[in-house]
Length: 169
Image (cartoon, rainbow, N blue to C red; front, top):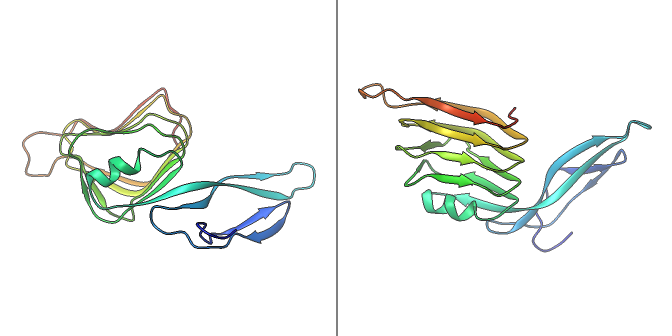
């Protein structure tokens, strides 16, 4: 593939590896792994990829803008301070925290769709709920830390993660 596709991992289809090549940059689309399947008859493995929008996020508004697109891979490039409640309501969204922190400041991030991944991110300074997951399937949380209100605060945080009617791993 040429043009706006970035080299990623190899694609394994029926046990044969093929490399996806080209150049994707911020704001473009790239192939990203969405599923791996092993053929029960011959044991061959196949990987399935879809085009994903790439978004580097430096602040609250960047996050809101990036979440307007389905099939988005968001990479935090800075700590984010939420200015309002933020919904993830587009399918196939991944937030890669890269160790950065989302400061909730009395706002919450709410997952409202399926196939959402949040990895390597910290949530801090929340009064009620940092992350809410509502009626969502296949939500993956990896290396997600919750640290409520600062120690010196007289108000205790309520809940780090609220899960309702969802499948989360």
